[in-house]
Each structure stands twice: as structure tokens, then as C-alpha cells.
Length: 435
Length: 118
Image (cartoon, rainbow over all chains, first blue to last red; front, top):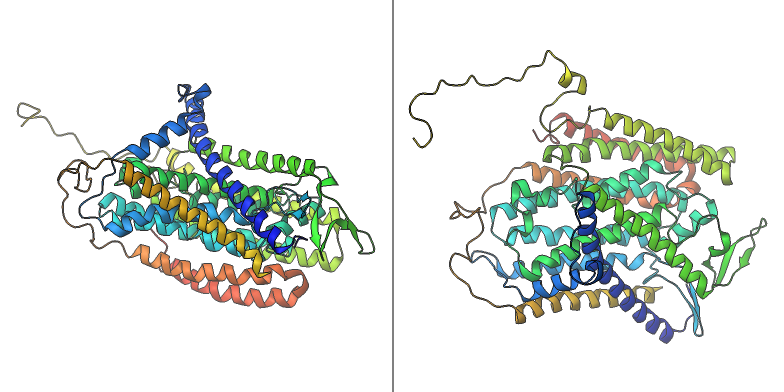
């Protein structure tokens, strides 16, 4: 895909791996602080601001504290899996990021370097395969702890993550209709060429993807595996010290990767809106910016400032979604477990199946009629917008997801006929409390 | 093409070293002062009742089976999705037949209450 020699390829790859890995872990550390500060502001308090300016050294202090804390392990626990689980949780979250392109190719004296850790031809399949490995760490943690709360948390996380993975996979299918390729660099390129970020022509796929991503990362409103009010802290109840913080690093790196994927699949990745100077792609050994009307490729050149600008664009989009993750956490209450399963199997799955077929039909009709370019995107936007409106209307009208205390439609619940049945109070006999 | 997988292996190696390093550093640095009470599984401060390896709801099992079917379906759709516009209506009809077969099974499971959590 690029013009580097093998030695240069190995060296630049190693540099990229270390840079991406360090930036990822640093961002995760920063995210823990931002989350607590944001929670503070949302709840009208300050949040941690004592360690360093604006509390910026708080993650370092937490890390040192956690590494020096005593770690407990239940005597009945399965020792091997108990230690293995946090390691298994933390690895998939980090390596999923490998296929996400984060900037335009960078020209160097040794050749042009792609700004993606690994531009492998299986792209999306790699993401689907690895993101599902995260469930092993969580379930093993719950099982190996030999604790009832942890076991229930692990069971719930396994069940929930596999349920929403189906919808996650199906919500990516429409993206592939338009991109025609599974590599993420191609998906970014196709969005630049179409002139539409896929969030517009595939709006319902985007919504389904976001919902599934929240469930996959076990974030509120889907944090059933660690529901504090029911399960203490769920699968990591028995974990303390560094192993405990490893689960948190895993959770935040999953959030980071999910946000980066939302930005790449639906918001044009690193491309800068309304500017065609950043359109860069490898095509038969050369870097091109597009095709002429006759189908001839137009040669293009990368530049270091383009790489920096596109990286900033990618960082802003990703940070936006990370912010949404945190904002939602401090806004929405938690689902009940039957609601989670109901939403996953009886809403998300049928809706995504119908949407995939509807969209495929629409695209084939448009191709047959010969609609191209802007009009093609505009018609798809209209169709998907209509689907989104129907979806939001149906889900929002209390028919599918009932309230947490009563079942029935909102009209039935509010109706004056319905009366709360209350056991009649026993007349008090005897001397009261204590007997 | 094969060498494009090399960075994935490097990243995998780095993250394994990182995970093992975190565990090892904590293991070396932290104190260990175990008492019988500390080594008990946490159960709201009570002495744990019964065994954790008890039976659990069969629902989780049926969900796992449904997952295998429908996740495979999603994976089968991906090759079609990539080539959807070149395959045209023939491909569309073939996938529709495939979908109908799966939806019949899904409807059956739904009607028999396999997806209910009441």
C-alpha cells in the first residue's frame, strides 16, 4: 500500500505502534480525570482539582496509589483465571485500535508513511473479531472470583455483549454497501468522494451503532454487569489495587476505540469537512486525490501540515464522542435486565435487518435508474431520515421499552382508572419496634 | 500483503508486555497481609452462604445459541454487502431467501418465549 522499503516499513511501524500505544494510554488516563471533572460540573460541584493544576496529576496519583495497594484474592477463587482476567480485558481494547486510520499519509525522506498502525485488508472483520474478545476478560473475572455478585455480573456482561454484537455487526453492513470495501482507509476515502459523511445517508445505522457501542462498552444506560445498586460492583467486586484499575483502563480504552470507530465509519474519519485538499489514497502504487471524469487518477502529494490538520480533525471528532459517552453516563438511569434483552433482541435485531434490506433495495433501484453523486446521497439521506424518525417514534412512545415500575403504555399508566393496590395496614398491636 | 499484519503483532506484543508488567509491578510492590476474613468472598459482610457454582437461568444459554446463529448471519452478510452493487438484484434475491429462512426461526423463537425475560 505504500512505497517504503521493508526495513523502513518495519522501523516506521514500530515507531507508530509505540506512539499510538503511548497516546492511547495517556488519553485513557486523561479520560478518567475528565470523566470525574465532568461529573462534578454536571452535579454542580468541582470534582478532583487538588493534585497539580486543574487536577491534571490526579491520574498519576491514582496510578501510584493503586500499584502500591494490597491486592486481595478470595481463598476460594480460581487463582490462574483470577490473575489472567484483567490482562485479557485490557489487551483487546488496545489492539482493536490498530486498524483505525488517524491522519492523512505523512511524507518522510524515506517514503510516504500511512497514518494507521496496520492497514490490513480485513479491516472491519478484524474489529468485529477483536471487540468480541473483550467479553472473555469480564466473564472470566466474574467466574474466577467465586463470588455470587461477581458471577452474576460476569453472566450479565457475557449475555449483554453477545446480544448487542449482533446489532453492531448488522449496523456496519450499510456502511459496506456504500464503501464497497472493508478497510477503514477506503471507508474514509469513499466518504470524501461521496461528499457525504455516512451519518447522513445512513443515519439509522449510526444510531444502531451508537446504541450497540454503549452496550458493548458496558456504559450507562447499559452498565448492568456492574450495577452498583444490585451487584455491589459486578464482575470486579473481588478485585482491588492494580487489577481493579486494569479493568477501568480496559473500559476506557474500549470507549476510546468505539468513539474512534464512530468518527471513522460515520463522520469521515480524519477528513476535514468542506475541503478537498485532504483527499489522499493509495491507488496502484501512487497517491491520488481523485479521478477525472474519464476515470484517470489524479496524482496528489501529502504534506506534514496536512497530516497534523487531519489528525486534529480526527481527535476533535473522537473527543466529541467520548464526551457524549460521559454526558450520557451522568444523564440517563440504568435499564432493567429484561429491558436490555428486549431492546437487543426484539427491537435492534429486527430493525437492523429490515433497514439493511430496505437500504440495499433503495441503492439497487438508484443504481438502476442511474442516479449518482450528490442526488444519490440526498435521496439516501431522505430514506434513512424517514427510517430514523419511525424508529425514534416507535421506541420513544413507551410501547417497546416500558417504565421501570409499571408496565403498559403511557396512556394506561396515567389513566385514573388504574389504582395502586396496597396491602391494608395491620392495626398495630403490642409495644412496637424490637419485638 | 502479509507484512501488513506485522504491526498488529508488534502492537499485540507491546500490549501483552504492558499487561504482564502491570500485574508484575503490582505483585512486587504491594504488601500482602492476608487474614482469614480478608480471604473470604465478599457477600455484604456476611459469611458466604452456599456455593457460587450453583445452577443459573437457562435463558443465558438460549441467548448464547441465538447469538451464534445471528452473529454468523451478520458475518455472512458482509461479503455480500461489499459486492452488493455489482451483484445487483440476483444477489439481493439470494440474500432475501437466506434472510427469510433465518427470520422464520427467529419468529418461532420469539413466539415460544425464548426471548422473554419476565
